[in-house]
Structure formats: structure tokens, C-alpha cells
Image 1 (spheres, protein in one colour):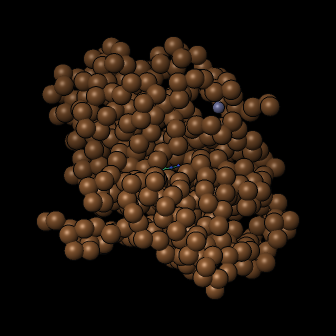
Image 2 (cartoon, protein in one colour):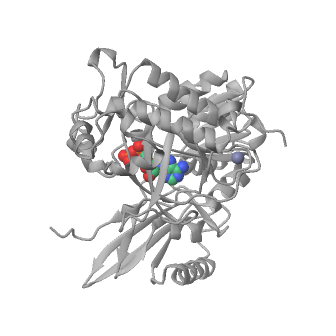
Length: 437
Ligand code: ADP
Ligand code: ZN
């Protein structure tokens, strides 16, 4: 295979040079951080009065971690490092776990962000002959404008379709010969279900690729989308605190996501001890942005769980790859004392071909115990009136889940296309237990 690089020198830069570049950019970030109300006192307390106080990359560890809580406390301008007159855009996180946080860009910041997204897109094999339909929420959410600008930078024809309205999405795909889409994995599964329900044939579309991200999904879900739509699906990882998309992305090898180390310094820590994990082990990803002057964020605890691949990638890029994010440390559910990640449930059910494209997880209190119910759609070939078959399927799902998560769930089967679909990130977990206060 021939691999295409958007920034060949940077993407294949030997690691010693890459690390020297990181140190240089980190020092610039320190200069900007010292201009923010939040970091100035923290850096002074750590004995860092100027960029020259960072002699090696290891000196980064003298700086305390930044948490989501800090970002909220710093709302609205605690992390702003430049005069407001130089700010030309703001974005905010989607607020999955509480109050959104805000980030600011100057003109150069936006230019740099765009070039990271373009690098990701181009690395999957796209070019200016592609027609790109960006089926994701525009607005404060970074996925819309971030991919939009990156797609234009590559020279693709960009259709800013936004999320939702599946029927209109098909029309656009057919009218303009869309070859690439960007969406959440849950929306891509939904698209396939609707395609079947509305009788839209795969041959009437020219789709070749999809970028799927913004929420965790399993390798089985990827394979399912690829098989159903006959396309290649590339995993896209980003978070608004670190600009949004363009942080880490799969290359054509589709085996881990290259984290752009000229733009970010990545650490992986044990979320309990806060010590670095051993190379290759899973832990919480901590990121320092090197490419945004207006809102520097140092050692940000993402709460996303992943680990580095230890061997280099066949594509020749020198930037390390992270594994598919399985969830956030705060996604973990404790059900009758057992730790369960929603991704474990997804992995089991998406591997079963009789199971349809959507599912929900519900937890309730039943006396003193917690009760877990997994509601899944059945595939379109399964008839809802064949009760013997349905009972057998239910039992098989229950047993397989129990073997994987050690909890005995209730399983409910629902007709294909009947469970609710969100336009943005999927909401799959409904924890109805009373909260301790
Ligand atoms: P919020 O934190 O409010 O959801 P963002 O819109 O910035 O705000 O979402 C970023 C988060 O989305 C990441 O921290 C991560 O948890 C999740 N995410 C983004 N891309 C992926 C992906 N490819 N795989 C798994 N999770 C992802
Ligand atoms: Zn690669």
C-alpha cells in the first residue's frame, strides 16, 4: 500500500527531533500560560517563572494536573491568555458530564487546528476528488466546524449537512455523489437501519469511507458498520479542551490512532495513584496542548481510558498510536458492587448478528439490589412474532452477557428501529437509581 502524508516531514519525523520540537513548543505554551489567571500562580508555585525554567520534557511533571473541575472554576476567562480583541472564535464541550467548558482561538490557532484535521483526513486516503458530507452537529460542538474546515483544507467538496434528518441525508448523498461522511458511530448504525427501511440501495450511493468518533464504540461495531455499508470506517478521537477533532486518528492501517505528538504531549497515568503506567498499559490519558496560544491547557486529565501501542505502525508515521478508547473512567457503573463499563456490554451484543443496530442500558433499584436491564433491537430479519426464537435469542444474550460482566441482566428485545436515537452523542445509559446526597 502507498501511504499518503499531509505533512510528510512532521508525520515521519524521527523521535529525537519530534521530542525536541515538543520541548520548544511546550516552552511557548508556558509563556502563554503565565499570562492566564489560572496558571500564573500555579506555575510560580512550581518554581516556573519563564519558559527557560523547563530544561527537558520531564520538567512538565513539575506542573500539577488540570481537571475538568478546574476548567469550570476558570469559566469564563480564567484560561484566556491573550487580549479579547485577538480572539476570533470560541467553542464549548458538549457537556456530557455537566457544565460545558469553553475554549478560545486566535486566527493562527484556528489555522493550526484546521491543518491537524486535514492531516487526519488526508491520511485515510481522501483527496480533492472526494465529496464530504459532514453529518454531525454544527455550532458550539467542535466536530462540525472542525471537520468542515479540515475537509475544505484537503480540497474536498464539503456538504455541511449537519446531523439528523436521515431522509435528507440520503438525498444529499445521491444528488452529489457523497464519497465520505463524518458522523457518530451510533448515527451511522441508524443510517443503515433507515436505509433498509426506506429501500435505499447501497448501489445508489458512492460512499467509500466514514470518520466515526465523538463517542466510544467497539471493534465489532466498526466491523458491523463497514459490513453493512460496504465502506472503510476510521476512528476519530478528540475533545474540545484539546481543540476538538484532530488529536488522534486512524491511518489506512486501521490499527490504533496516531496521536499527533507535535501538537500534543500525551501521558498515561493510573487514575488512582496518578503515577505513569508502564508503556503499553491502560490508564487515563493526560494531554498538554502545544498548538493553541489563546487557551493553553497543561496536563489535562481527559478521564479517557487507553494505552499506547508499543510497536511502530506499518504506515511509517513516528507519532505513537493509542488504542481505541473504551470509555471514560467516570463511565464506570457499579452494579451490585461489580464494576461494569458500558463498552463491555456493547462488545458482547454487537458481536451477535441477530442483534440490531441500537441498544440501551437501564439500571434500577429493586429492593436493596441493583437491577440491570439491557434493551436491544433485533435485526430486521427477525420476526417479532416468533416467540420461541425470541426467547432463545434473549436467553443467549443473557448468558453471554453474564459470562462477560458476571452480572445477570434482564434482556428485552425491541423491534428494529424502535429504540430512541440521539442526534449528537448517543445516550445509552439510564441510571435510575436514587443518587446518594
Ligand atoms: P464532552 O466531554 O462534554 O462530551 P466533547 O464534545 O469535547 O465534550 O467530547 C470529548 C469526549 O468524547 C472525549 O473526552 C471522549 O470521552 C469522547 N470521544 C471523542 N472521540 C472518541 C472516540 N473516537 N472514541 C471514544 N470516545 C471518544
Ligand atoms: Zn499508521
